[in-house]
Amino acid sequence: MAPETGSSRNAHALSAETAFNPSGIYVWAIELVHVATGTPWWLTVILTSIALRGILTPLTIRGMQEIEKLRPVQPRINTLQNAMQAAAKKGDKIRVARIHVELKEVITSTQANPLLSPASGVLNMILSFAAFFGIRRIATMPDSPLIHGGALWLENLSAPDPTLAVLSVPFMMWTARVSSRFWLLSVVDKSLR
Image (tube, rainbow, N blue to C red; front, side, top):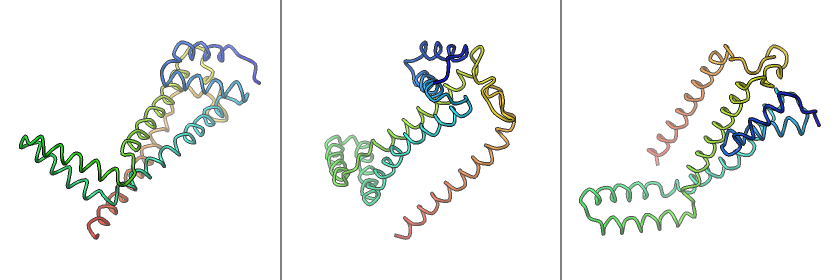
């Protein structure tokens, strides 16, 4: 176990102050990994990022599986939703209630949980923001352990990275392009059915 340094004590004090929010929990977790493994801070950041993705991957996959369960009945769901909106515009509350019951039966017949997919997306977003704000909180504290916790050419992990935009913008554009192609393929596939 690594000895507790001054900056580790600062991280501990910081995590104790903010332990009741997602970024505070992330600060606590990253410090726990650092102290328990004795790894340098750059490796601690990588290990906790991998662990976070490892925790989120099964939830994301489960959310995708729930969406796939609904795919065969999606045209029926869309028809019922449109009919429900039309009935609501007319003010026919009885018809809206009947359509709602039918819609619930259609979704129940698939044995899918339609709330699991958005819930996994929201959890993914919350934990990603917690990691970002937790790392930022550690980087901006006085005597931050990230100032001297880097390696090779990235010695100061708390300094802004001028190459971030150069590397991340093309990656984001590529991701958007690939995602749009898959979306377009799914739309074409639906129209051919």
